[in-house]
Amino acid sequence: MGCECNASQIAEMAVENRFEIKDLRNHSPETLETLRGLLASGTGVRPDLKRPHFFELEGDTCVFYVYVSPVDGSVALLATWPRTADLEPQARCH
Image (tube, rainbow, N blue to C red; front, side, top):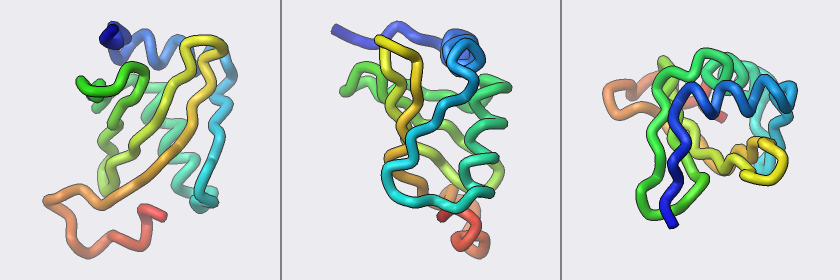
């Protein structure tokens, strides 16, 4: 069963859920704010084709890997990593 969510549906679920983000790895408050902004805009969202309800969101300096619960719309931030084009701003991703 593949995930059929698109960027606007992710943004809609996040808004309905008031951007509840479960931070599973103690990311910085700045990183969580960046993720909230990406969720609100719905831009840069790519579904993980191998895992339903998992997505990559591409920010200016980082890529975020998240799980969006189909039950309650909450977002679990699983990982971040620097965008390939950016080598210097790695510290801002954590």
